[in-house]
Amino acid sequence: MDFDLKDFQKDVIEKSYNTPVLVDFWASWCQPCVTLVPILEKLAKEGKGKWNFVKVNVDDHAQLAADQKVRGIPAVKLYVDGEVINEFTGAFPEHEVRVWLQQNLPSGLDKEVSIAEQKLAHGDEISAIEVLEKVLNEDKNHIKANFLLGRLLVFEDATRATSLLTKAEKSSQFLNEILDIKVLISGLEKLKELNEVEDSQGSLEEALKDGLSYLAEKNFDKALEELISVVMKDKSYQNELPQKLCVSIFHYLGEDHSTTKKYRKRFDMVLY
Image (cartoon, rainbow, N blue to C red; front, top):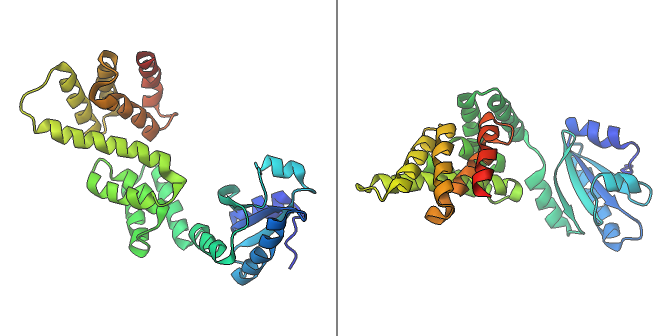
C-alpha cells in the first residue's frame, strides 16, 4: 500500500469528512521517524479502511508542515471533519500507539454525540440530553458525552454534573472549560451555605447571595449585575469568588453571547 502524500486537500482534508485520516509528518534522516513509520503502516493495514494513513515528508513539503504547525518530528496528527482532533510528537512503541488510536479514533457513539451537539446548536437541550444519556448507557467513560451532559446539568443537578465532569477530566481536551464550570458549581455550593445562615453579614454578602440566586436560576444578566457590584466594592471578597464567577460565566456563555458582550467591558473596567 502506498501511504505517501499525493494531495493534502484531497487525501487528508476532504477524506477526513468520511473517514478519519492519521497523518505522520516525518523525514528519512530522523531515526525516531524511521522507527515509527512501519508501526503506523502496520496498524493502518490492520485497520482495513476504518481510518486512512498518510505520510508527509517534511523535506518535500516544508511549507505544508509549517502551515500544519509541525514543531518537531515525528508529528502525528489525527484529522476528522477537516480538523486536527488530537496529535502526538515522538516515536511511541506499538502498544502505546494502539492505545492512543483506541482512545482517539471516532466511533459510532461519536456520531451520536455530534447529533446531540446539533440539537444543542438549535436550542433543543431536552433532546440533546436524551441522546447523551443513551451514549453513556453504552459507554460510561465517553469523554465528550460526559463533558456535554455535565455542562448541561450544572444548574439542575450539580452533584451529578461534578461526577460527569470528573470523568471528562481524564482527557485534557475540555480541561479549561471544566475548570470554569467547577467555579460555577462552587458558587452554587456557596449559595447553599449562605441560605443556611440566618443573619446577613452585611451588604456585600447580600449582594453575593442575590447574585448566586440569580445564577442558580440561570438569570445571567442579573447575576452579573450583583456580582460586579461586589467586585466594585471589594475585589478580594470571599477569596475573589465574585470576580472568578464573572469570568466563568463569560466563558460558559461564550464571547459572542449577548450577555457577555453587555457586561464584559463593565467588568473589565471595574477590575482594572
